[in-house]
Image (cartoon, rainbow, N blue to C red; front, side, top):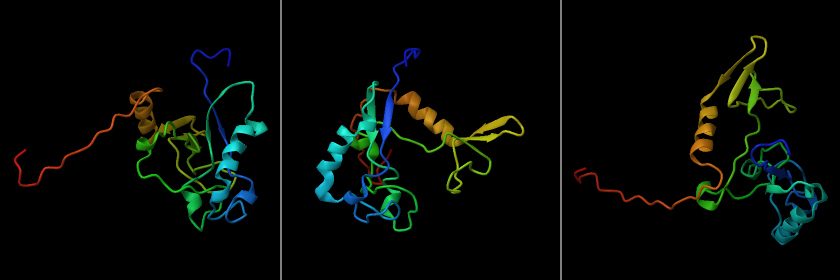
Length: 164
């Protein structure tokens, strides 16, 4: 951290609350936080010894896979939150991708759920390919720098018969 030219922002993440706070009492499958534990879970984040470091924490995530954990077939550790339709309109300030680089099979992966990534690496050829997601992430990073503020914009639709 002392060698960094720019400030280092640490993001802490709990994948799920303790099972006794959840609706299905399991780590996998559709799962939500019981309403009576909203405050307890907030306090858990503030007092969790794993989150108390010598370095300041810039942000936290409250769960893993918040949208997918709302589905019955979900097979990973997660906790569901009702999805927000327009994240940028609700003070979202970051986005986490599981993997920045994967091989051409979508791995390596500890649970064999091979997926896509912004960069595909071909180690045998000592090559890599930047995919469209790589450039999309770059676009957000360039045009929405840290500290940006959203300005509310509304559209007014003209009837199709109106001249342009």
